[in-house]
Image (spheres, rainbow, N blue to C red):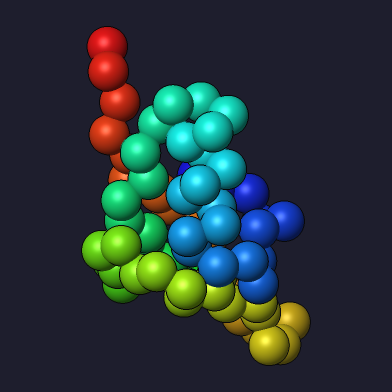
Length: 70
């Protein structure tokens, strides 16, 4: 899960930080709205910024898909 503190930051900045800090490749992002069963999956969305909640009734959860060595 990607921390909610990353809301508003672009995907490529998050992916770069993860790679520099951990050597992991973030290649996709899933955004779940209000804990629905399945969210939208975005493959390498570039400059796409993680959305910020626009009201108290909207809650986002962010999940990253990674490539890692064992």
